[in-house]
Image 1: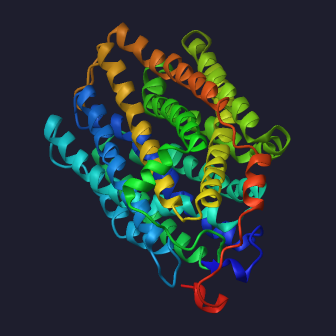
Image 2 (image 1 turned 30 degrees about the vertical axis):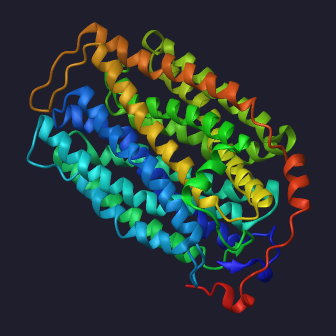
Image 3 (image 1 turned 60 degrees about the horizontal axis):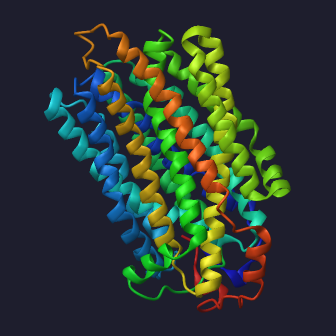
Length: 464
């Protein structure tokens, strides 16, 4: 990264925006594909019991609660010619793609042994994701000091996320199909995409400006204590966790909704198109709304639309496939706003903490954030698996199809609609408690002294 002295802190070039945004092909694919396909892969291809499969999806993410804050502190304390964050992008690239492919390698196992194998591969892949994602998410707060510039910067990332979700939600299921060989091919193809995105973001951010604090002080325990005492961070973490949990439940339920409610397993691809489409076209609208309503007001609107779409989908068994897709479009409009605004607000919280403390500890904040995000997203699959189990869902494999009881069909629709809607409404309530506005942040940062770079602009952070 380039020192703050080398470029005006509020200006991020188009090349850097694109270079940073390409990393979203890693973030979105690794979040979406396990959330969408891993539970279904285990219950309907490897014959893993539904409840165990849900636990397997969740447990590796629970490990993030330990790993991510550690990675965050390590990146806060890193001093290198590439800046504090970028070396960790390479570390993640060395681990994640390989073990992502192994998650879907299709071992010659069924039932519980297959579930254990997938769980171990997922655990190691999640560790690689932590090495990459925690420093990656800390970077926007250190690229600019401008409140609205952060939203504009992240708009590019959200567009890439939308494309990536389209790949993972539409292309990945098409490749995977319903066979072990299909899932194996899908795992290899997307492992290559992950690797390319991770390397691309490393080189693409070589000239990113750096406006953050120059060092981190204090132990990890002290920094975690600081995060716990940051009211804006805690409310943001809570509202984001609620929205992420709701999305995780819906992602896990989408293949079941397509197969058992709409009667067409391949409909999960068109449902994802209905979800992703609004993300591609509404980002400028959400940027405009964030300026007009402030980010909190826009976030309340986005969460309300998300919950409304969930509730509308309850009528899908009666009103049919077209109606279900229209309901998902409403969800998609709200989801687009939630994705953009929560990451922009996270960058604001990190900048606020840096201005107040004078220390670089955005890595710890993003470590906690990413750990919670990954854990609750995976817990969404656990919740959905538990709902299926309560409904009497019968696991199977392609060679031995079964007929599901009516209670299982009810569990499929309730798990996808009512449960995410309730969780989302809770997130909207928490959004009302978040109070880090543009005016408040400007007051704090206006009194902050400009960071003093180490060395000259030429030696502070050379390009890769």
